[in-house]
Amino acid sequence: MFLILTKNEKMKKKQKILRFTFRGEDYEVNEKGEIKTNKSGDFSSTCIFLGGTKHHWSNHVTVTLKMAFENPELLNGCLGFDKDHGTTRKWGGQYYGKLPRITFAHIIN
Image (cartoon, rainbow, N blue to C red; front, side):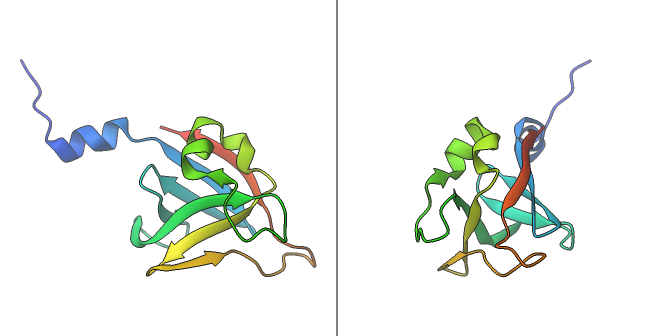
């Protein structure tokens, strides 16, 4: 007996997910950069994770999405960047009085 999978089912099986915590909230990012939070139910095609940077004065990504999938630990300690409806944003704010950083970055299958 043969099992026939559709193209979407094959993609779901092979897709890696980057998971990390930022400002106490869990995030998942697929290989296209689409972001899913623990508040949203699915990956967003309008909010794309670009990567991160370790230095708070930096205004550009130094750890790209591709680099993060190859070595997720590079993201730990970074500020995040995304593109939301075409606008690039550096994640900020405060978390317990400090600049929030990405923590616990790892890959799940």
